[in-house]
Length: 375
Image 1 (cartoon, rainbow, N blue to C red):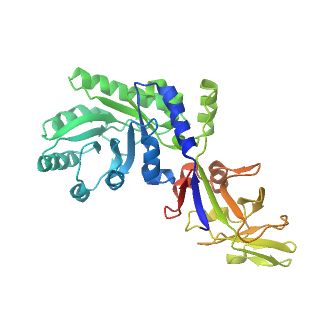
Image 2: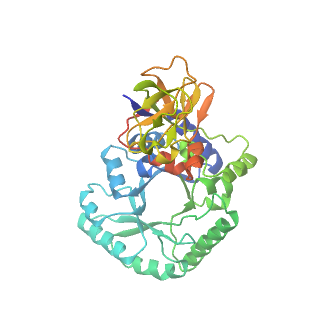
Image 3: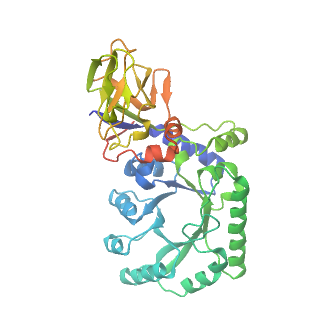
């Protein structure tokens, strides 16, 4: 195995236990395992989370829900965003799979499906409180819910929304909470009581107690990553004991070591030229594996506990690294792309800053075909 991902199971569980300490026993925790569990591996993380503090699992679509069910995991699953009508035919057991609804066509389709399988389908109404993405507008919700309640074979089990800027804008987050609470109050005045109300993500769970409602949806934080520096600073003041532990490390091995003379062009486009005689190590990883091409000539990796610069363009499946300062480097030596080696550490946040993105993208885009080891 030349390239692999290592996942620390204990860190996943410890992160969830800290969340439980914050929200208490009455508030449910949904472990968000969508998009291959943010690159960590959907099935294994779903198992780890459901064996720890998670009461629910959150997925992006019906495909992911079916995949988890087929693996034998029985925890309740909520589809966060969308589902395809055709995939309904693939469901053998509708129990404990809850669907989002944000238009009447969806509601009618699920009602007809419920009639076909002779079971009620659990749904959660999606509200747009300010993200301007999926969801019913608050002022349309009461009439929308009343129309849905007339459809047979449906059970409205939840109502939910999503924050636009909980990592950076507390004022706007509080406005969204207020809109959500006001809507719940109006529904209850109309004798519409919905059991599960949820809006909170990782950042808001730490920042605002009012956002917890009946359930919090924990994604990035479960994996030991901070959604923003502002969230980290706010949480550190509020919960001094709270320490996230990153779970993912990304490693590979050197497949060739060679020396080239001064003024030698390196890689595609000859984007780097050596300034002296240089020793290079070739790594079997590139942008196909999810190692971003924007790290060309600016990224670093860890070899023998030392930081080594990437030279030239990152290729589809190969990366070239300057190892001139290392004396005993050889083929087969371990290389760390993300994680710790010796006293040095390269984080997903460090990589994100270098390529102008967020840590979510860095880990989520790691090729799912790369083997994951769970320790």
